[in-house]
Image 1 (cartoon, rainbow, N blue to C red):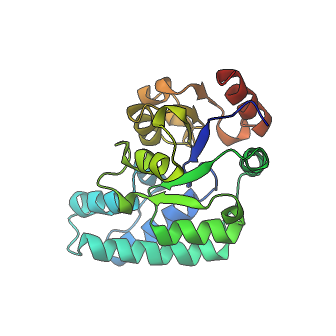
Image 2: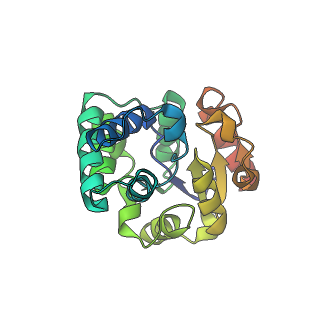
Image 3: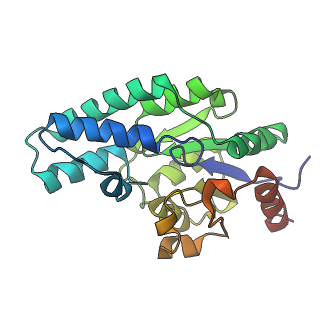
Amino acid sequence: MSGLHGISVVFDLDGTLVDSEPNYYEAGRRTLAAHGVPDFSWAEHERYVGISTRETVALWKRAYGLTASVADLLADTDRRYLELAAAGTRVYPQMRAFVELLAAEEVPMAVASGSSRAAIGAILTRTGLDAYLRTTVSADEVARGKPAPDVFFEAARRLGAAPADCVVVEDAAPGAAAAHAAGMRCVAIPSVPAQADDPAFATAGLLVRGGQRAFTAADAWEWLARRNG
C-alpha cells in the first residue's frame, strides 16, 4: 500500500478537475442576456468563481435587479450549462493522472462542488471520471455553499472519514476557506491568477501558484506522502 493510509481526498470539480469555467461563463452570459443584461464580461464572471451556482444567480438577481425568481434563473443557467458541457468538457491531464494514481492506491475520494447534482453527474460521466469518483456532494444538498464548510463535512461523512484525515483539492479562494473551516488540509491550484494572493489561499498546505500549468500528479503525491509520513 501507499504512504497515504488513512487519508481521503475531496476534489472540487469546476476549475479543479475540469476546465469548465468557460462553459459556466457562457451559460451565465446567455442567461443574463435573456433576462436583459447584455455584455456580461469574463472579468465579472471571475468574481463568482468558487461560489455555488444557486448563490451566484441569487447575487445576479440582486446586482442586476432581475425580476425572474432564483429558481428560474438557476434552471435556465443549468440548462444552458448542460448543453455546453455535453458539447465538450476537458479534464486537466495532470489532474486525471492524480485521480488515477490515488485510485490505484485505493485512496477514498469524493467530489464536493457548487454545481448542481445534474451538472456533477453529467461532467463525471462524460469525462469518464465517474469510474473513480462515485461519492459526490452538491452545494444544493447542504445548508450553505462555500466558503462555509458544509459540502466538505458532508463529503467526509459520506466517505466515513474524519475531517482531519481529509485533504481538499481546490482552485478557488472560497473553497480554500471552506477547507480551512472544515479543519481539512488543502492543495490549492488557483484558476484565477489574480486571486493567488487572496488570504484564503494562505491557509493551504500546498499552494501551486502557477495554477494547472504548474500542477503535477507526482508533486501532489509526494506532498501528500510527506505530510502523512
